[in-house]
Image (cartoon, rainbow, N blue to C red; front, side, top):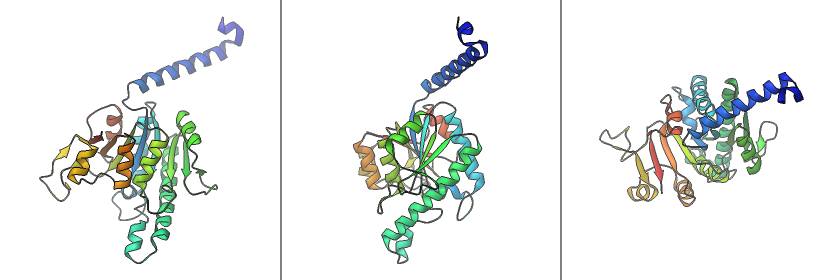
Length: 265
């Protein structure tokens, strides 16, 4: 009947699209999270370098992100700028804090553009939104527009932090996560979770698989800065701290495997 009304080619195309949508929906239902906010540090982009952006690391991250996007997960990303400039570091050498923080925000936009290019190289559709207006290279941050992009399967990268000095990119990540109704903040770091002490300095440090927000504060553990952490706690937005450099970790977390440390109520 359908073939007679619209023609065989059109009917076949509709059937193919329905099949593809069904497969995507099945994959999505198998995942623990539907929409995530991935927080990456700027230093992570350096790879083995001492400064700047390592193209090899960028390509590896793009492949990891593509793997979860292929499962139907909606992905928003906030990236730091510490590999280029950090406002706090500028202050220590006599620079005005506000000026330094704005320079740091611009550094996050550079990293966002680099990541955007790497993601598009592997065939993903992206949008870069910035808290500071720079229409030549990015969209201004608009919450409703960001959500629509996510719903359409585009990866949204948020640049320039919150647009205000004195706030870290950790705070920007939690703020954007709350605004776009993300299920979780995935904080990719160099270590594989939250430890009782710095595992790079103390070999006897032990890892937590799960810890509450209150216990993190009581034990004085360093997960995020206080502003970001409190915002996440108040909005009941869980945080997963994990090693982003371990291949496959991002997908395993989204599948519900016990990777890294879960911080929750």
